[in-house]
Length: 83
Image 1 (cartoon, rainbow, N blue to C red):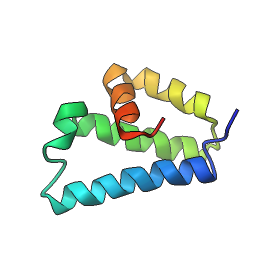
Image 2 (image 1 turned 135 degrees about the horizontal axis):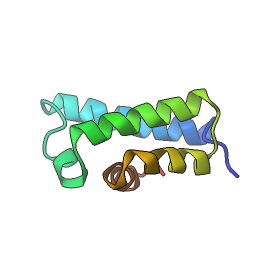
Image 3 (image 1 turned 90 degrees about the vertical axis):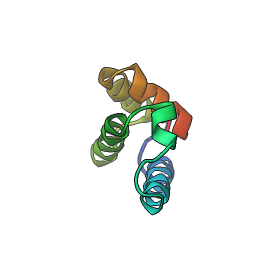
Image 4 (image 1 turned 180 degrees about the vertical axis):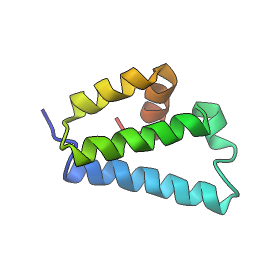
């Protein structure tokens, strides 16, 4: 299985960082997150990606971690292209 570290982790982290920067420039998570989840879901997603990266987890382990956080977090991850 592909590892979440290296290229995959960098892409996921870059994607989340770019979205955060965009949202902050617009005064916060703005209009985007409410359509795909909540700020709380986004924070959970970021924490899960960072934890998976630190633990060198593969993609399947990250997906499993996200599933434990709820359907809305999984949906947000898919919408944002993280998994």
